Image (cartoon, rainbow, N blue to C red; front, top):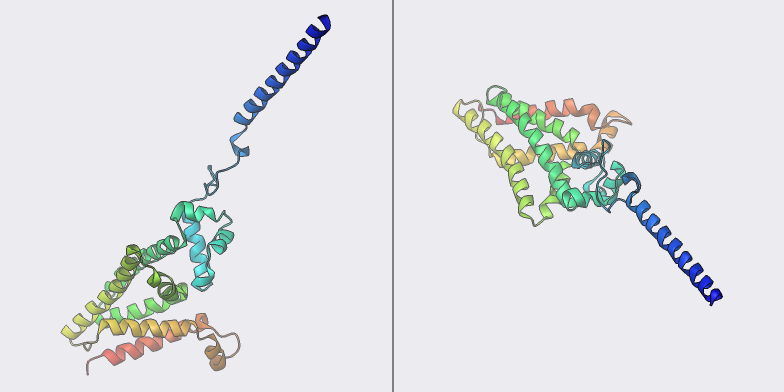
Length: 246
């Protein structure tokens, strides 16, 4: 009997030690410093170095200034921003929503520039300012219209349609006001603002992709950035002189 009681006591003692060890382990996990706990997938870090939507927007704009839209993938964006790809889903739901947010941001900036064009003087002066503004815009955003045509125009969402309408209407409305006033004061002929817009955008798009042509004309290493001013001067003369009433 004594032997039995001794064995039972040893078993109880071992069970107590295991229970205390388990309790200690649970406490250590619960009280583990927050920085060492595993972050939920796709959830942003907290603190002064927290990642927010502005970082993703900036990364997308930087890539779209250098790469065709098809190459600006979710993985490429995350790699460029130095974040988990799931953060795109966390903040923007998907890549398409992020691209729409980029266009919204650019359009808001361009609305301010459009206001400056509208205050540039008479219709001829405003037409010159608008053309130069578009040449400058395409230098800063060389793949913008490819982004619209290849990505945004193919989306079926209501927001994508609204973005396209806002962009087109903003520029066409500006041209329309210029030519209406020009016809009224007899400085410009009546031209369709839709086709003027298409013509200028088409010229700017081709110019930004004409590096080989420019090298043939001006020597190795020549590119759009080197001749943007001369190109703008040419388009301005071409359009304004062609639009003048005689």
